[in-house]
Image (cartoon, rainbow, N blue to C red):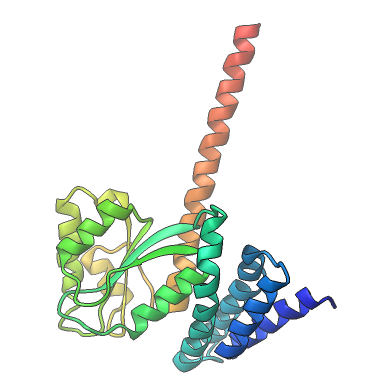
Amino acid sequence: MSREEEIRASLFDDTLNGRAPEVKAATEEGLALGMDPMDILFKALIPSLEEVGRRFEKGDFFVPEMLMAARAMQGALTILRPLIAETGAQPVGRYVIGTVKGDIHDIGKNLVVIMLEGAGFEVFDLGVNTPPEKFVEAVIAHQPDVLGFSAFLTTTMPMFKVNIDAITKAGLRDKVHIAVGGAPVTEEYAKHVGADSYAPDASMATRLAKQLVGARNEASAGAQALEQAVKLIDETLKKG
């Protein structure tokens, strides 16, 4: 096994087990050896975080283990993010997220942010106690694929509907997928307020976001292929 393969294996295991200092050290060593930042991200860190998500969904991991793994990966992302940006690599998608007005809880939201960034999303975190107008401004400014609302209290859950109404009034409702989540939130409540999807945890939120942008990218690629085919047919007919 080459040293690069050893580093990838180490990054996978240390991220999985939440060993932040080791993940940071292995990332720095890999870069010093000339490893591609994208290689480190997509062949070691992201697979590890996906495994964390699988273990969480099976009941083998719990929130503390997820937080430890996410924080370990965050240390590596801090190093890799500017290097990847320099390469001009495009994010897999854009995601605006915030805890709704009246609610200052952010642990769950922060975990979603870390996992989304780890999955390759460009995330715009609006923080806590976010008023509807701030969500509207962020959708206009960033044109995200997904807009996420988080609420930890039953008393702040009604802000989902207030926010969605504000997005609708601004003429933006058909331009963004709205996802909601938080400890007291249920799928039934998400449907009741008019959200597009509900995620019970950070792992599912990330998986749903990846599925959404994957489907959109496939549709876009299909449309481009169709357009190219039509263009080719037109050119052929003209020549004929």
